[in-house]
Every structure is written in structure tokens, then in C-alpha cells.
Length: 110
Image (cartoon, rainbow, N blue to C red; front, side):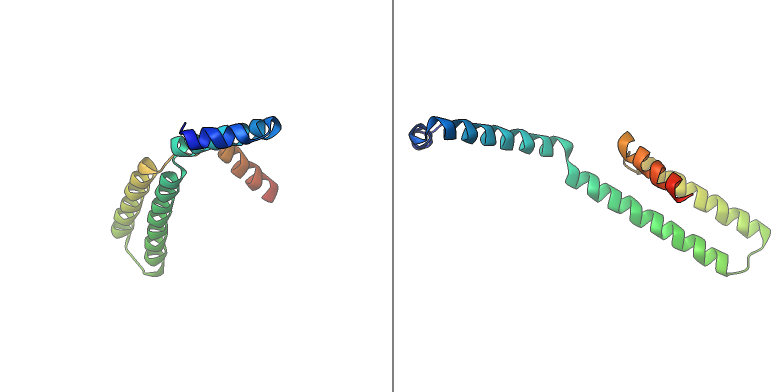
């Protein structure tokens, strides 16, 4: 700790020293947790995967609007399934608590 900080800390009353130390330690712990959890990167990954699923949905909608024969339909379905599996494989995992929350919301809708 630098001497100016130590002097300022020593000048505080004992009660304020405790609260100042507690707040400082809490800030350091929370900062470390935020860095460890890397929420920004996870959010970007989810956004990227959501965009890819959106593109896949658009492909499905376009395919449903035009008449196709059975062979072309099977080929398109196979392409959609392949893309779906690839997107699913690169998607970030969800925490179990989030999955339970989504399932509870779905159950309450029915």
C-alpha cells in the first residue's frame, strides 16, 4: 500500500476503517468473480448462436413457402438438420438453474 493511502486510512476513525476495508475487499472479490465468470464473452456467444438459429428459421420459412418435390424436400430437411446440429454443438451451455427456470415457465404456460 502506498504511503499516501496508508496515511489516509490511518486518519479515519476506527469504525470507518472497518467499513472502508470491508467495501474494498468486497469490490476486489466481486471484480475477480466478474473476470472469472467472463459474462461478456458468454453473452457474445449466445448472441452469435441466436443469430445462427434465426438464419436457420428463415431458411425453414422460405422453404415452406415454395413447392418442392419429395427428393428436394428430403435434401432440404437433411441440410437443416445438419446445420441445426452444428449450431447446437457450438452453442454455450446453460446453467442448470436457468434450465429449471425455463422449464418452470413452460409448465406454467400449459
